[in-house]
Length: 164
Length: 164
DNA sequence: CAGTTGGTTCGGAAGTCACCGAACTAAACA
DNA sequence: TGTTTAGTTCGGTGACTTCCGAACCAACTG
Image (tube, rainbow over all chains, first blue to last red; front, side):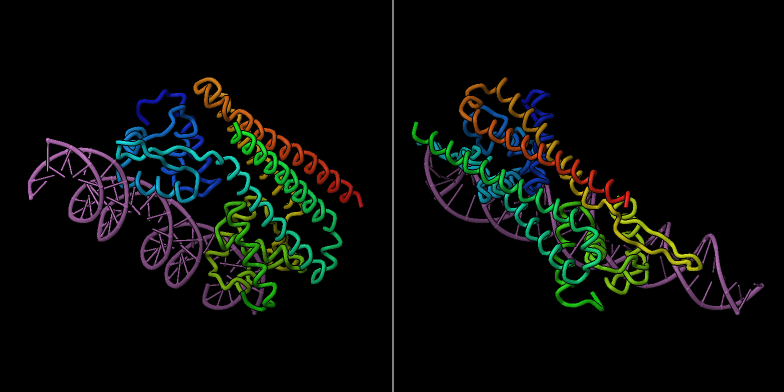
């Protein structure tokens, strides 16, 4: 991390690490994404990213393209300038919410399956653990509902914002 | 997976995979844990696990010990029998909740940090994204609260259960 | 057309992970 | 005391990941 305050540098590492395991990104992709989220510049060039992250051209290329493909970032061009400029997509937080949603939903379905299985095949065990299993299922359901309303809220906000 | 119905076998794979990335367990550990959750037998021996998973002694040993260390499973012995018998701990779902809690809490703290950072260093950007950032922060807070009450509920249930 | 700029693709090096088999230990038993 | 049983430890191997540099390509520029 060059040309960046120490505070920002530390936060980039921390945030990058978080993306790394929340979104399953390679380390460099996580850091690039973090840099963009913490920057007020609208559009970093390829060169900028190389300089900031001290990574190689090839790695930066690969990881920028990955982030674009996953819709975490997008690029635009300026007339009379061959460079591409990258920035976070407007909806990146919504994407995160949707990922949360997918994972909670998947877990909920699995928990239901397990509860059903044990009810059928291990009835004694199920009776013992019944309430615990149901508490867990309820918990996931509530989380899922909260996510649903939050996603709606965020979509509404984005629409409102577009009309300005 | 031997000596197991196809239905159970499939569910073991699925559940094992889920543990693998929810709890960061090695694949074999995930499968072992899944087997125990889906079984009505109270206590699997070392041998049982080797047979069911078709894995080597050394791998089973390593992964059983890992699961014990992480308190996902525990073992007991029978008088006049040198074998150890393994089963899930009573609180395994509470452990899961507590892990969820840790991760949500960590994410929330990070989001707060990011919001604070952008408010200070990129005020224009922050103003634009303000509501979105806050919506996300609120969302995480709500999830955290739901987790807190669920954990309390589960502890209460376990205590009640112990008194029987 | 030759050279520069902006970026991609490819092969490989270094590191990590999960698993295995073989050798080992420690307790029980004959 | 020698043998079996129950499980652990260690060295190594194959698969995978991440990153790098070098060669490459495509578009513009003089």
